[in-house]
Image (cartoon, rainbow, N blue to C red; front, side, top):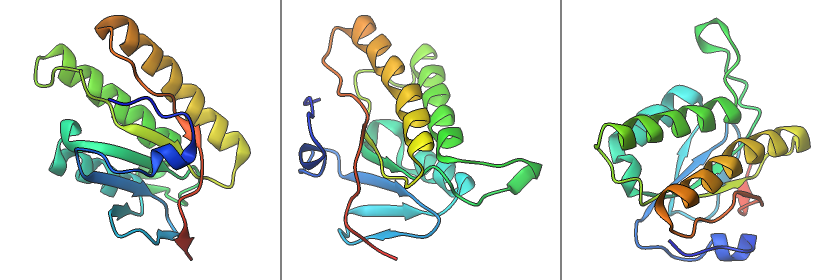
Amino acid sequence: MKHIQSFDDFLTESNNEVWIYLDDIRTPIDKKWTVVRNYKDFTKTVEKHGIDNISKISFDHDLNDFSGGSEKTGKTAANWFIETFMDMQESGKISGEHFPEVTVHSDNPVGVQNIIGLINPFLKMLNKQTGNQYTQALAGKPLFKA
């Protein structure tokens, strides 16, 4: 995986072409994104494509998703993704050599930091486990239409 240092680097082509955009309202202009509107659709989309086939994820924080009696946010989705990744890696279903590039495009600055604060320590741990260079999650906004 290449190391991205800016949001512009994040938007460049990658070998794996599944890009997931989690947002309850906005739709990115770039047609490469698979748009999902809530937590349940996010998990279904990841399971459908497989973690190893996802190259980019862009998270919104506030999803207005209260399914199952509790609020589901972009951080909830990011946490699920990390836990699923770890479970699959430990069971040998994936090598753990690939983790998608992540950006957070939320308008909620605290939400942005919460998701980045969840993803980056995990990426740091992956780097120690595999010796590969992993990128850091960063804030950025793909062009979108409301």
